Image 1 (cartoon, rainbow, N blue to C red):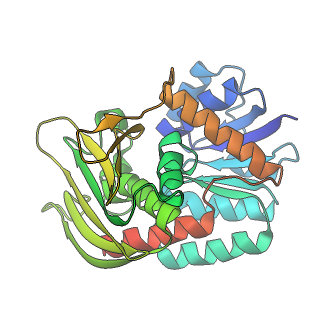
Image 2 (cartoon, rainbow, N blue to C red; image 1 turned 90 degrees about the vertical axis):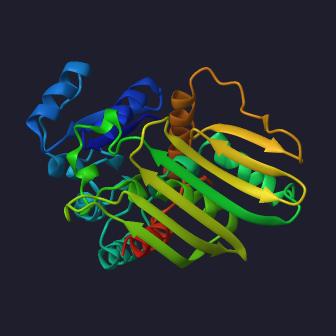
Length: 318
């Protein structure tokens, strides 16, 4: 069976999703939509056989649509998700689930009541690196897990390849805490269960419209302390890293997908040999989506898991 997808939002994430869907034999893109005529025109140059003229509402209601992918900025997620629920369509939504916690709680209740297949796009919902950490913890490989450290730094925010997405620079719905830290708090949730926020500190620039420049926090999940240090600005390579510190063995993920472990000596790389990690990760996710659509067990986070992450993120930013 081929699953037909409506792609809403044609920015960076929507373009990536389009590319991966068109390469997977089990998916077909029914159509794509973006409020920006320029974004639609650009998408048409890349995928001339796909319909980018039918508005989002019509794509959602179409009897041919099996899955609605929501890749628009966060404040618009709920509106499209609710329309998909009304049309009885499965939903894959980008993270964060939203910005307003009360609205996201109501949306999550509606989604759960619908019984429809649902997932939110966190990187560690289907990646090899996230699976490796979860399996190590379940097998007791850490010994006693003593703590988790999350470290992130960006020389420029938004990153150069995101420069056209101006909303990512704004406090209203952007920032690296929502955009990047959320992936790693989800991984902690997947491995350890729900976390509580203990302390936090966030710094902003003088311009009140702009997003954070520094954020630190301490959380606890399953009795394990989780420390966060994130910042933007300052020359040097970007850093994206999470480390799980154990009494027998420690594991870390760097650069999103590279895995390493140590039993007290130097870090030893355990990254699997994969030709293209982005393609591999995308296809792993798409295969999990197929399982979701077919009512089979899958590893993708649902709206409830995304809501737990959003509650933490917005509490940090508060």
